[in-house]
Length: 140
Image (cartoon, rainbow, N blue to C red; front, side, top):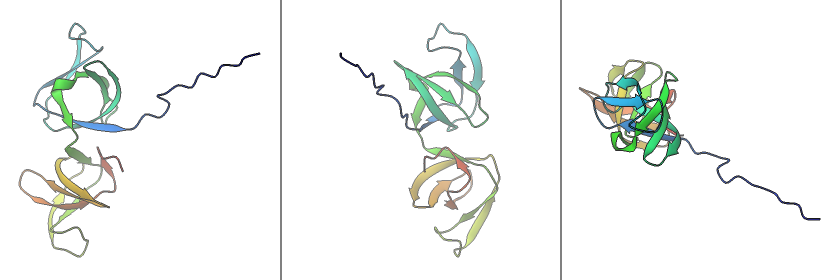
């Protein structure tokens, strides 16, 4: 008697965050240019989570649980995050350093680098450090 065990290789899928490369990105119902457009993003650098892929297409989900398919040419490696709560932007990666600005909940922030529990970011007017708690778009 022979017993066969089938072990799926993709049991654990690692979270992958990507960012929108352009200011206008079509999200489609399926992984094809023939598939109808479901909605359009109009925010460059918006972080999205990849949940599936098929050839040159990536199935994504955003912070508000909208999902669909985007051609990989419209995406780049994650370089942005969204604050899920108001944050304080500091001069250095420490709560004891000089506060520079208040970052409002929902703002898209461009990442420069991360260290342990702090990320250096830039917004339209400021550069500085924020703590990494309550952020969407970053795999901890």
